[in-house]
Amino acid sequence: MRIAVVTLFPQMIREALKLGVIGRALERGVFEVEYFDPRDYTADVHRTVDDRPYGGGPGMVLKVEPMRSAVRGAMGVLPAGSRRVYLGADGRKFDQSMAREACGWPGLVLVAGRYEGTDERFIEQEIDEEWSIGDYVLSGGELPVLVIIDAIVRLMPGTLGSSESALQESFSDGLVDWPHYTRPLGLDGHEVPAVLASGDHAAINRWRLQQALGRTWLRRPEMLERRGMSDDERELLEEFKIERARQ
Figure 1 (tube, rainbow, N blue to C red):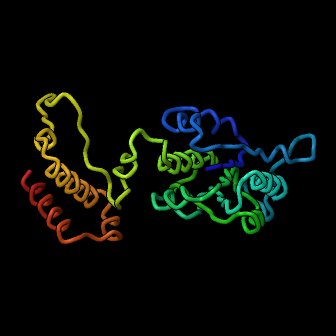
Figure 2: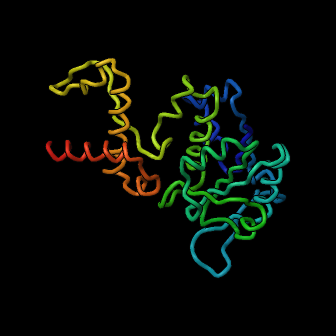
Figure 3: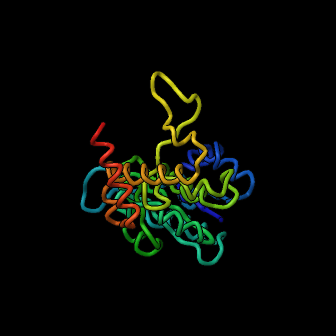
């Protein structure tokens, strides 16, 4: 997959993508990233990309011309069918299903907003989708760009050490993840659940599903409402609730 990032701070994203699992995937060519700075598409000596908002008010607004030229430059190096996404606080909230969908696109332009926002005419004419990573305000779209790249790239073949890793993570089946444990078996009076050391893989899988259902019920009940449950899963969740009430 080829990704183009339109940002006033390319170095912020470039350095972060060198690290960890995503950095190794980048080195192996699992995906490619190119950067387009709107300042490079200005004509004045000050490389001006923003101006005061019509109607008054605090802050500055990114201008159409340099943003449009940067996005068009990005689209010029990407394959046909690539999508243009603007990162802003009022966009559609990004989730795992959107990451899976984007993973299949041939290319992606991610546009990081800044200041008070971007001239709406740019959004209307040059953007396919608007995404947000949550209901809070950040200084710019660079951190959301990194979040989205990470979420998408880890789903691509060749990124994770095991092809099953991405399938078993939180939200992959509409549930949060189950609890994880490693050695030692006992620590400060707390033991790893016996089933995990039993070697009974059917029992382990059942326990993990039950814990995922229970944690989702406790922490993100709206996810269960959207997902629904089978009869077996409802039974597992009831057992979880009974056991929790005994504690």
